[in-house]
Image (cartoon, rainbow, N blue to C red; front, side, top):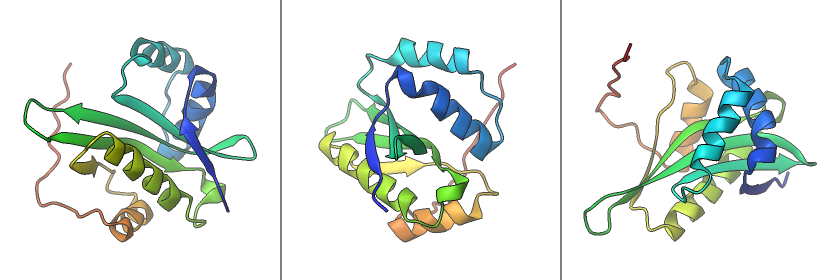
Length: 145
């Protein structure tokens, strides 16, 4: 199954939000998501990648390129890596990660990082098979009221 990958534009936001809300059991507001997308639309380091199958979004991830002040230190960070449930186990996630890696190489990233909730066991297997390694360091979080 060949999925077409491309950079999302604002016409895709409703479908991205619907996909992520379903996959991650979120309740993101489409209007707020569109506002944030528009605020970041000119930032070349914020990349919303979608996978299309028959003109329907079946996959999505957001790539953030983090440039540092240090020589040759750019990092790609992924979040909201998801594939529509009905299309899983068809190598779409792998195809998307290949596209992500290609984009990150073009942007001179030295590594690619992602975080994933503990319950996403199948996704973790996909990431490991693709070459991601689980690091010992924990992902620290502090909620700000």
